[in-house]
Length: 577
Image 1 (tube, rainbow, N blue to C red):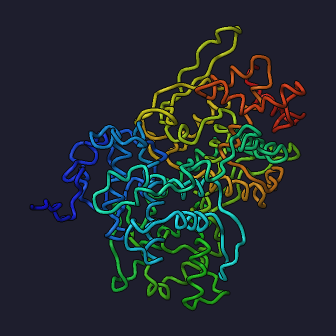
Image 2: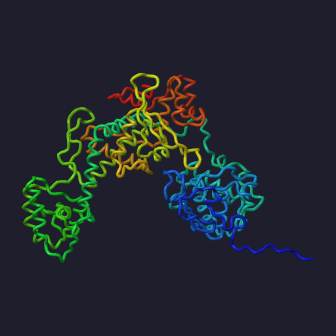
Image 3: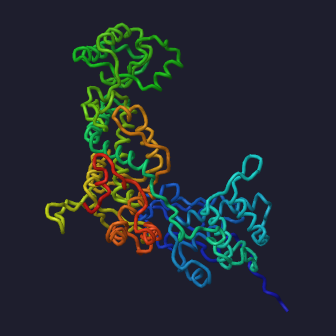
């Protein structure tokens, strides 16, 4: 009697060998883009058509080399099964996902697989067959608690982190029959078969909405500062941005038309003297160096009392048509430079003779900016751009993904109001990404005029405002808001009469919740909020509006802009006005 032997494992998948990953997952690629194959250790989805702007390039690359070789094939099979649930071998699995997971979700699953498999390697586990329920509990505890350098528990990670830790084990159990190289024991049922959310003790959201509105004492000065910068400083920032770009065309070290020079070239006394004579003739102060360049000069031995220490000689050289100012030229040019410096002085190049504007508190008129260096000018334009983003997010309630899909030309021509004579209806176009098929769904938002003007300002501040180009692109609101708050609370903000913005959390979800509350507690507001926020179900909107408090008291909670505020800020949240 002979016994049939199973074929030896050759390192190839029994299910997906030779598969085209994007073809199996139904992902369209741009022309001539490299198509990731299943056997590749890096799957690059950079050129997949329809991926949201919010998805960063690093998240679009699936790197399986971070997993030890013995489980790399398991990870590939699991990830592709989640991308292609209708594959003829995946579909019959009883507990497999029936709908394809988004690329973002699959990347999150891969990240957790990397942590889990590396954790197993650190514990000298050589096969998934060795995993027990105790190991599953140990990994959950490993991801649940935050330890100090001595191994003592000092805190807990979020419920989402715990759910990810439990989900990776549940996935390995649910997709067990799919794996070629290694698989968990057939009898393994961690946590009694409970879902990952139940294991992680995820809040249900029935008691309260996890996302809190922005505190009133933060919202009011933040929105007031954003509206002031957008309306008062916006036109000046647009002009400043143009001047920066124009200066870069002529003053950059690699600008076209400059003559390449080096230390061995003759000293260009005539060229430099002519440009210095122009500065003195027009009574224009010499350009000042950036502060960090002055520090570098001091490190190289410049004397602190040298009058030429802050002078940007490189800028003068480029104005004279030269690529650079070589240090060996300084002795020959010192007398001419010091003479010009004594006559006109030295000053930062941007923002000289700035126009006067009324301060935010209305107490005085001040220059809209003090003289600034190039880096400071770029930062100032960025602050005004952030003010427009804050205004758009706070008053429109758009999600981060929807803001990032805005493009040049997204403003629709103002149309006449349908119900109130003399009023115009403003619309902006973007895409809904959340819960939509790959590529998103085109949609429009009805907004009030300040949002419309904020979008217009963002278009004017764009570096390359071609029709259809991304208006904002991918950005970090937390980073931008931190810089905005620091600037508003700095001497620059105080000079313009801005109220300080207190410490406290602010993010796009909180701004969206704040606007939802303002809208929902008005007659017919729940339905209006559901439509405006693009919620799928009214139940979601009721969760935003906290219906328990509405039913019990009939009054809305105190949120931003619900109290009396100066300068009519209340109007900007009154979407019915």
